[in-house]
Length: 158
Image: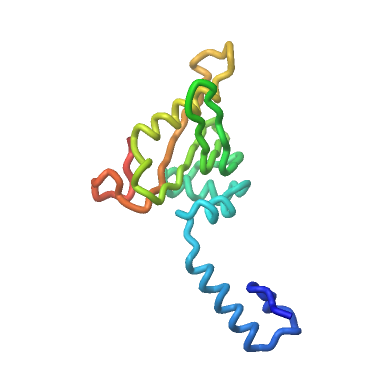
């Protein structure tokens, strides 16, 4: 009987060599995971307020941020145009909304996309009949692998 690719190397029925080989393969897979990869980022942040809180504190240099909730891959419908899918959607105790986008490719990580996300986010945050003063402050943050604006900086505000 062929053994599955991913052995339970803690299982006592496997030889010491099999356990060690599997352990080394697992470690190699872990070394290849990066938060810039959508699947790994989703697994790390979905529902994990402490992780999102730490990420936002570092990016925004605001140690007092308290994240209330976080959801990954939240789809926001636009009945008149293109929908958006928020990689990380978080809100804090003061009512501010944060959309964090993880973008490996340079294409698509630009000001107009950030503006579009901000507009759709705003459209979903204000209910019919509410005063515009009720619209919460929002932040759209792109985490990119490269310096897409060519400013030689790791963080750029738009």
